Length: 595
Image (tube, rainbow, N blue to C red; front, top):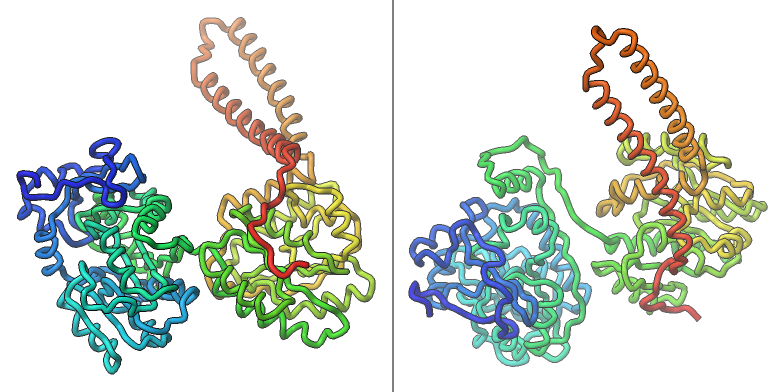
């Protein structure tokens, strides 16, 4: 113990020593004060930041506080703590915790006994009661204020609500089939000991769901130590590697790590970000129920996509179909759902990538893996309606090698649709071929077309332009693109810019020639301007001061033009570099149901 009564400790995961002291610390270090002075800073998003200094373990890489409260101090603090989520909008919190529940649901039968440590106001428990088949609940919650609400949630079921979260003596050994800790693990002084004790209470094959702060999360990178993960309540913050070391030390087998989906009402998030940077606003403009969700995958769409495709092709009995799904390293339960579909339906084939290979390479690779007489490509976001498949096939039977859906009308954001239309008009105008406008790639490709594409072997193709290069007649089918119903688009400014520039540099030399002509013209103008200034100065030496303004303006103008042209040149060089590298489009982790 130190003189102020705080605990002094080595790394709680591996026992190692920190590589350096005070890696991250508040302006006033909490360890320099006494316990009573810190009590007001224990809870809340909005109070001035004050926390124990964090250091990095030299053994396992854990970011933790070498100085922290001892067990008696923690018991006193947790006993007087108001509900953790009192400041968080309830609807956003429900959606976030629904994502946690879906993660457990994807890997558990939701049967037997459930241990939940720190259920708080019970939103996760509500999902378990409503959709699970648990026959017994053990809920460990130190906050007495929320115990009546928890009792009501599990009313009529065999349950035990324990005013504690540091010991599991109330649970018989091997009694539970699932355990859940949502933002509890990073509160524990000795997480290894706690998890070892918890493991004894779980049946063989049971599932443990841990939700904790990731030190490399978006909010952590954006706000740094100002975000609530760095506060008096969190003696350690994990990363995937330190989490793996922790679970192995506790005797668990690490099955899967992934980022969770977090929802924030925009007004709430904006207000708290302003608070984090010291701008003490009391209110922000109202955003109603507008919600911002950060999500990376299409788990919510898989079942509906499969059902709609099967319903569409059921009447096309003279053809044999294969459904090829390519998973671009999803971070949610997409792969688990697809594996279940593949196990029950041999028509479903699955390719799982070792990592995310991007928005261009992965779909292209999936298309060229098909071996049928024709291939129909559509995205998994349900904005490409599978109900067009029979129409694709009908025109293909009439002799068209390419049947493409185009979206002259979109129910999505109008300004994005208008921007895309303008881009395709520009691309068509500067290309040496006619580019199909308003196409997303959704359509039917005859095997003859794809054989040409395979022989070209472009490692980073602009497929919509590449098929136009081949010269086949294209039958277009207009459709009104529906609004995305679930999730958010994975495209952002960078991915859209990447696609746009790829289309231009792949099918037009106009930009680089404009740069060359403009450079020549501007060079001539500069020489002419210099000659004019020189003549005027020689003729009117005393009455014609040149001054520095024309020089500065001319210099910055020329530098701006020069940087623009270098950027254009760089795009072409980058395209050449990508092609010369000849890296594989993707690397497969596994494939299922391929003969």
